[in-house]
Length: 224
Image (tube, rainbow, N blue to C red; front, side):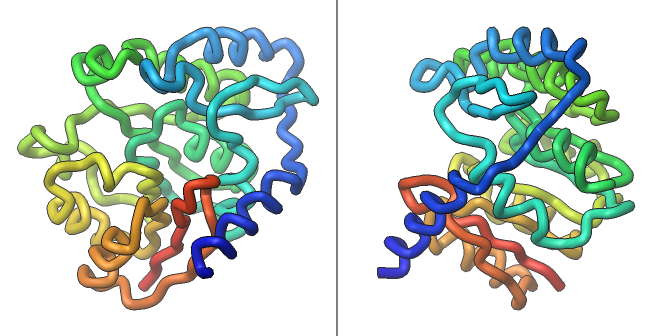
């Protein structure tokens, strides 16, 4: 029953308009970004988004996620990091519309993206940021095998996003320990076990924001 309710909320959220507009002269950056395989063999275009009333088609409608996270907290003047950023839509749209101070997108190294079938995904993320004239920094690290990724990424963030990432990480406890350094974490969880990992690492307060897709993945805001 609970999962069915979340799925209904997801379906409703896709009908709430999210009006993204950019300088028309920047539309070619979006065209270049959507010419890139960003989702691997199973879904070459990971996201869809409508900008300037033009649909850029893909597997997951960005508006559904955006409508859940955009007002979750007051982002103004905060530093945010988007782990597993893919095209960096969180990092870019919050930099543009949320008034954040520093915005960082983190994705896998080139050799890993090559294996996934998305070797130019970071370039697509950079083009997406350029389309919005957004100052976003992108960092590539291996969150499973890099022995020092915490130091490379740093801890100077107010909000960390971990959207549909924890499920794919082998050393989940290590990543959760890293997340525990921040006051706010917004997690897209594949199942309840991921929510429990965050609760067991000091995040006793949380709000369930809603369903992120028709499979019932849940977006949760954890805070201290």
